[in-house]
Length: 420
Image (tube, rainbow, N blue to C red; front, side, top):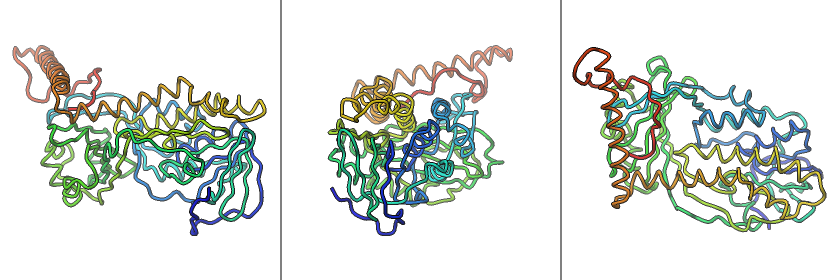
């Protein structure tokens, strides 16, 4: 069960520690779980190879629903101090402003977010710097041996290692690919000052099926103006190479309406790329260990449900299952399975997977069923536009439809929906 050593990672002094819960992985899932359990007075060990989380392009925006979960977990104030809030959402469809929504969104860079959460760890839960060399699990105690010889003995082991496979493989669980290379996220900065850009968050939906674009979103992170584009392509696609070489030219060709909204923008950074597949886990129902977040399953980030899955896992564990498990002896598989069978967790996982699959199909599928669905959706949207223009014309005393764009400035209660 040995795991390849990371020789650059500093290690804790040799010795042995006994805790109630050992958490391997101090990303978003592991750190928030440690913070939540620490507030409840639990004895925790949080282990990660690096004191400072490495640069990583991942989720960069979340919604009010997820903010509510941060609050329930007791880390809302810390999270708020690390994000940029926004509430004016402008949605563009068919090359023009379609609706304005008043709803909270929160933007952040993943690495500073994780490091900020780590900085909030209380003294009784220091971050243990080290890498797992060996792990053994059982119905009573779990044993971790780090590469410096340190030993951590715990009643429960939580694996929160994200996409990393080393600890998962050492324990004996496997990933199941549900949709390989499902989607691709492109991230980059725009040379538009926050003053020029203003305060809203902008969402631009793709125009053509052939472009395989879910949507582009532009928003502020502090003093930066950031863009995330979600596409259904692979890293090796020539389209991706062309986009990385000249993103401004391609953006203007794909969505010229961006120029009208953001002025003479310039792409001001390298284009970061992250490929994501849809995966689940098998062989995870075992004594003493539980897998959470992306260590358990992965879904498409375009729908914003990834953070919701992570926080739901953490909330179910910290508020319900771990307190109940620690009240009685043992940590056999029947206890652990109560978490995997929790209807709240199941609903969050199924929602994220269902949305991931539907969004790709409604955007890219060319079969009759999906062409009819797109026709239905777009017909309804165009009727909404026409009705809104007609109402605006009536208010202005004009017998005909108002000028182009007038009606789009009104706030719509209708959801933006998915796809083209």
